[in-house]
Image 1 (cartoon, one colour):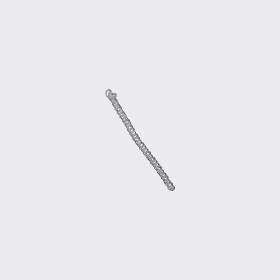
Image 2 (cartoon, one colour):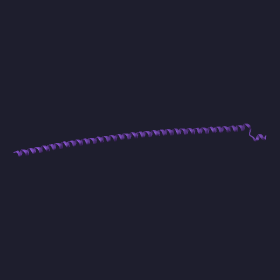
Image 3 (cartoon, one colour):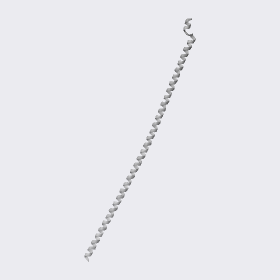
Image 4 (cartoon, rainbow, N blue to C red):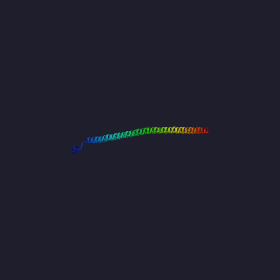
Length: 131
């Protein structure tokens, strides 16, 4: 009798240890499921982070491309302005050269006219002397 009082009946003792074991397994399953969910959340965060990183790189690349195109456009405009200034300077130089030529022709004509007048005067003097 004492032995039977000291230890719980077989069925009851076996039952309590079995239910403890089930609770442990259930707890282990819940913890494993929780760890799995945590891992999935981390994976999702990492995937989103990578997508945001890729999107940021794409935005940066587009901005750099736009800046490059803008710079290129500005450089073309500068080149065009330089070319225009060069053409204007060449036109000015041609005009100056024409003016120089005209002045030279006018000077030649004036000199020729002066020479002709001088000759006329000399002839006039010669005629006057002959008379």
